[in-house]
Length: 509
Ligand SMILES: Cc1cc2nc3c(=O)[nH]c(=O)nc-3n(C[C@H](O)[C@H](O)[C@H](O)COP(=O)(O)O)c2cc1C
Ligand code: SF4
Image 1 (spheres, helix red, strand yellow):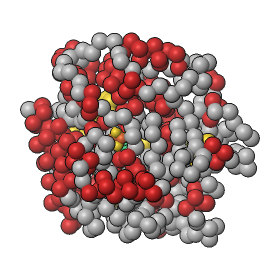
Image 2 (cartoon, helix red, strand yellow):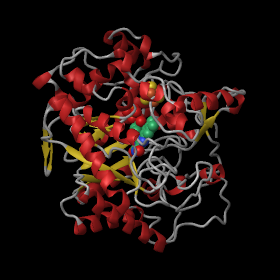
Image 3 (cartoon, rainbow, N blue to C red):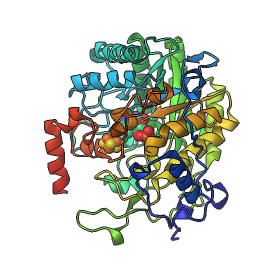
Image 4 (cartoon, rainbow, N blue to C red):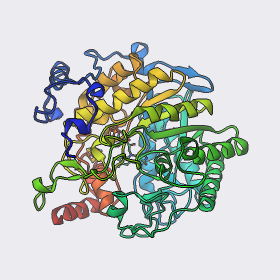
């Protein structure tokens, strides 16, 4: 089976905008697009139905400044920041000055919804890197300081903490555990994956987590949630995205026992975590960040790669793997297409459990970064964009819109807006006003220009020099064992000794 590029994206009926031209147009550098009308024309030429307002509204007229009150959730505006990990905790998982700086900046965004700050591991063994933040007794004071520092930044921008929710993202890295050394991966897997096992060098006899070990991890989540509550957080996110453990449960079709097979079994991990948290710390709210659809792993096309230059991404050969039983939100008969039916069933479970906060993301940075965070430039372990990154933005927005229509009571936070660059405010405003999502979240943009949406919705002029241009150094740096951060645009990183090391490592590869 050799799928065409279009069929790797969406089925004919599901294509975003279903435009004829979009694959043949060269990728336009958005930094060179001078005004919103040209940007709108470009969307049109690509055949993408991304909503985009011409005029930015400010103050009470801005859709982004509207309060939202649903059930127990009250938010004073529609701006969120996504969790952004920095790979810069101490070796024992405690906070550092650079983390405090990042959290303060997340606060200055003016966002009333702080979705998790950054991924915080529920145990040492569950860390994704040897410098990941850990939730433990010895880090409790540090966690509290992160939260209060963020609040200080928020007060500086907005003057009030009313209508604000601050969460902590709880994670176990599962297949991507690397707790002790940057060069030593220590995967904890739920099932054997025919492509990802090969990439990680795992043989058929590599042990799976037992149901008993899973019980221990669930207790770690309970303990971490109690700590988060003690540190003053309003909610915890039970992370179910990006290929980490929670997400791997959702695709554990081939696993036997209590946690695999049926969707009921594949969501047992989540349900048991939630039950424990609700009984231990009923004041703590719960949210779920979920990769709502996926596609099979991509790799640089070897026929178009050369030394020092990654080729465009193509899906790995899956001809022997159909029906595909190793993905969540994937069409099993054509695994390069998303399938939102599973997502609907998952969201119905959240709705039934009275979990209102849902942050919709997609894919994984490890095996399909163009889906997870559309970018013009690839990270060092990635590939050149196989499509115009705007198609990736549109794909995530479209999935969120369809699901939001079906679950009006859930509070949807939208992801993957950063690639829109200067036109992010125009699209965010339209998306919230038209009900595509309830809240728009900033990921990479929060590293370069956290106050972008606050500035635009205040009627202030936007600082173009601070717009993230999706250079991907914030991902390349950790792949080279260095802290994440915006090396090209943030002087804190640009002028650091890490920048010299990063440039040397990039030149070497
Ligand atoms: C350097 C970096 C760190 C990230 N850390 C996290 C994280 O800790 N938890 C998480 O759920 N997503 C994380 N993400 C994903 C972002 O939250 C977001 O989903 C992604 O960047 C797409 O949104 P954007 O287009 O606004 O950047 C990270 C992304 C980057 C580039
Ligand atoms: S390194 Fe900076 S400009 Fe590049 S993607 Fe990351 S935040 Fe954006």
